[in-house]
Image (tube, rainbow, N blue to C red):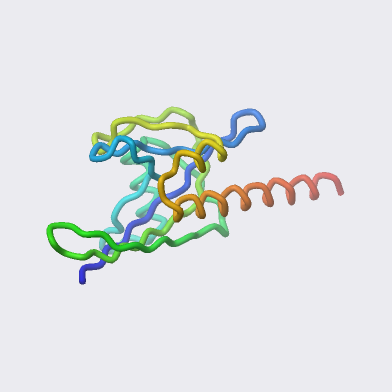
Length: 149
């Protein structure tokens, strides 16, 4: 069995008091929304691969949120072979809302958490979204506590 490893991120930005998450429309399945991600190359760390893929696919610069790392595993078939796929996802804040998608994609969307949960087709990405939302909520709550002291 063949194995593949990819890395990417749940990319978000804040607009006023709303958190918006970035999803890409893939060229091969434009109805499919996914996170920016791609293969980890030889000699590259997971975060280096995630940063490179985000830049290549969206042109965005991001800042990773320390303490968030999720892994999804699935199997798929390609040219008669079963592929075991691992995807490592980080949480990253976009420094700009201006996305320029690569030729691998046909578009993008910035979605609220609720919109993302409604539009994602698979449970694994929904679970990662819930964890990302909880992480950011707890981070904001802890920041507020520090300011009130």
